[in-house]
Amino acid sequence: MVITHFPALVLFSFLVSVVFGTLSKDTLRERCLYGAKVFAAFVGVALALGWLMYFFVP
Amino acid sequence: MPKKTAEEEVTTHPKPPLRQLIRICVAAWLVPGFGHLLQKRKGRALVLFFSILAMFLLGLAMEGQFYSLNSPSYLQRLGYLGELCVGIPMAAAKFFGYSGGDPFFVSSDFGTAFLVAAGMLNVLSVLDAFDIAMGRKP
Image 1 (cartoon, helix red, strand yellow):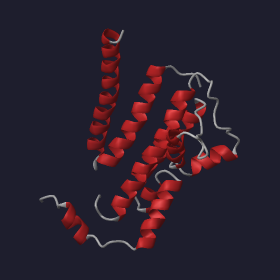
Image 2 (cartoon, one colour; image 1 turned 90 degrees about the horizontal axis):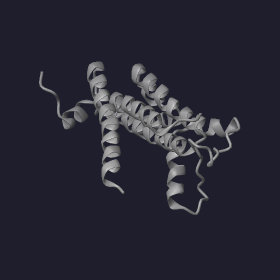
Image 3 (spheres, helix red, strand yellow; image 1 turned 120 degrees about the horizontal axis):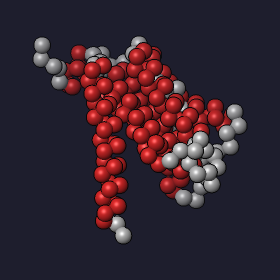
């Protein structure tokens, strides 16, 4: 399966977020919210670091 | 009703026998989510099983490498231990002929990360099953 970096990152983040949400919280609603937060953090930080590297690394 | 502290939870919930704790932890290691299933947490068991297995299978599909304990690099030996933590899926992959990936395949590095991460997530799953057995979690 050939996959580029960003889809691999999104897939990885999604699966890790699902597990983190399931293990960390007790109710379904809390799990979904926490999982969504973790997923957004994973992808958001990756995008932010990518842009930082674009502007600051020669 | 005020939430109980961790100490109150432990004192009100009887500590299970050591044999049962070992059985749950080993089961949780061998099959992702099985430790939760043994404790009647079916929803959690299913979610953990499918997500950890999906991560592992995606790692195989991307031709991720299986590290070796005989590798001269300490990091690769740690990677082997990480992959081993996923349990039976790794043994099953080797049994069905997965040779350990193609390091020159374009997605191989991603696949290796997925394989190790699947093992690490299973470690969290084992610890969670242990906490449930000890009465620290619902």
